[in-house]
Image 1: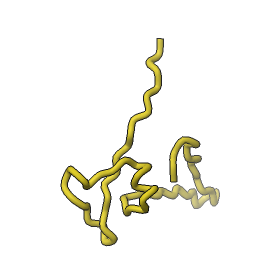
Image 2: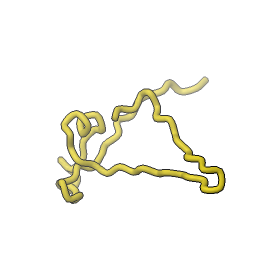
Image 3: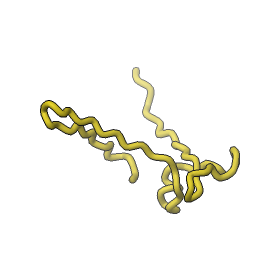
Image 4: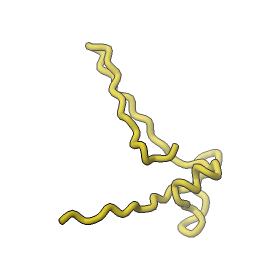
Length: 68
């Protein structure tokens, strides 16, 4: 029997405007939803995969359960 799905809280490092991490361990990270709600700065990655020969751009659909 499969284990029931338990949503885990993802913590993000909170950054200053110039990209420096705030705090060490305590206060330097917050749950993902809180970071987005509060408008805090955090790291993000955008990857673009473009095939020049076919002029195709590969996109990945974001999960419906993810917040912005």
